[in-house]
Image (cartoon, rainbow, N blue to C red):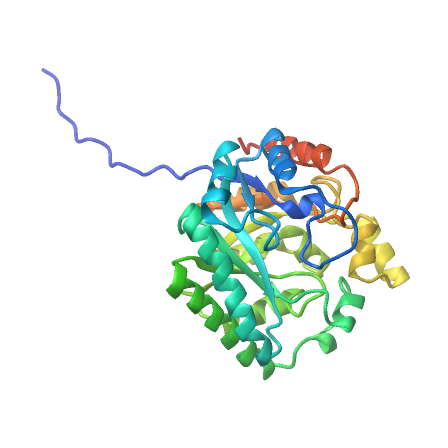
Amino acid sequence: MFKLTANPPMTKPIPPIRIANAPCSWGALEFGLPGETLGYAQVLNEIRETGYAGTELGDWGFMPAEPAALRRELAARQLELVGAFVPVAFTQEEACAEGETRAVQTARLMAEAAGTAPFLVLADDNGKDPTRTRLAGRVTPEHSLPPEAWTAYGERVNRIAHAVRRETGLRCAFHHHGAGYVEAPGEIEALLASTDPALVGLCFDTGHYRLGGGAAPVELLRRYRERVWHVHFKDCSPVIHEQSRQNGWDYFESIRRGIFCELGRGDVPFAAILEELRQTGYHGWIVVEQDVLPGMGSPKECARRNREFLTRRGCA
């Protein structure tokens, strides 16, 4: 006779980590810099042709701002919309009303074009403060906001994140970033401590973390695992980083010199980071970003090599 045994417990498989890219890898940055950039259609074509499954939106106006048109462009290339970057001068109360308007406008476009899965990626208004721009990659505690300022800063971030959730259903993740007030590891910690974990996640960017002096990305991922909602992969060249320190280059000169190099050519430990994300069940997107200035380099070839780098590390 056959012996009946209980069925094994059903376990829900963890979805694979999916890989996207972003227009900033083609020089479409948020700073209003001079120089020619490719049109959105070519950028989207090249994102798809180099093996990526999704894209971020880019600056407002780079892609179609009408939901049906944006949906058609993405569907034609079988790309998913995964997020949009919105910088706000959170140190200035008077700037936050306008920032909230832009954030909600951007989130509404994404919600109507792609549903509530994409993230609204908030950040400081990077590259505007002269001191922080000049010292990007070598800030020290005296250049940070005073402890008493973080409460107001966090309240402003919470306010915009709440408005985005209320009006569109999208969640917000905050992007620590060079040349802004949330760059160094201590500043990331202060931002997370001053914001509501139910409203504000972390967009963890490997290259900006390294630029800001972060030496232990896996430790940060373990400590703040529940806050890491979105991930950007970029590398950071230790040679250019040291030259930037020695020569006093500002943020934009460091980018022009190639501080954010192709994946695997810098000192970001991607294998360890990927292992940590997999072990802890991260099932969001990894967005490859290789920030370049308008017209700089060969974005499509770099995007292809970056995708191959991740394929060799098990990212299908």
